[in-house]
Length: 230
Image 1: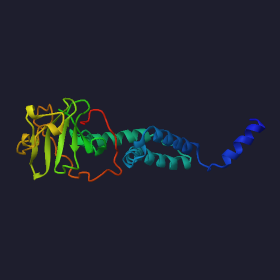
Image 2: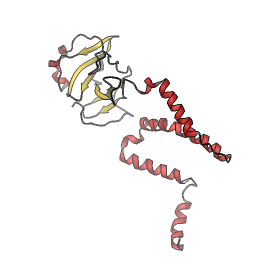
Image 3: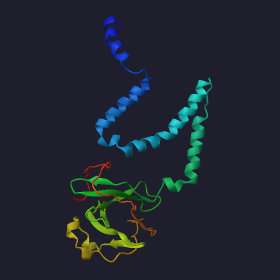
Image 4: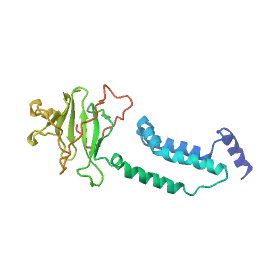
């Protein structure tokens, strides 16, 4: 390295904290992904990253102690695989759920909240299909279900109705693309939750989460996505 290069490099290096190179690489990656997506730095996404990295962090701490004592442990991968196998076999239902709801996001151009309802028509179905749950703060009593494939509203859930009798399933002729085109009288008397779309075993949709968003969003994602009703 030339003297001129050292003169340029040393003042810059001296201004930086004495941290491992991996720390600077991590900071650089955070900056890149932060600029690429506004949701990267959201509390929900950072929490999700922390949960995914937790197992590796715990294993790394254990390996660090082993290496500091001048030892080595080659069984780490086998132990991790055994633990994952035991967890998946004993509680597989938790990780392979038949249906579930995502968190709420806000659709600013139409002033409503939406959530994904993910479902499997049958247990062996590869992946998930989904519908949207639409919640208008101006109509706080109802959660509307929207089919993104046929692009119609097909029912609503009465949050203040009698438990077990809260879903109004629209007749085929009354299902519309715009909620404003569906008269209130078209919604029948609430009854049981309908069956999971395309299900053949009679499994019914689980009710939406009881905790509904209130007012304007503060820390929720605000994004317009294709496929949502206008």
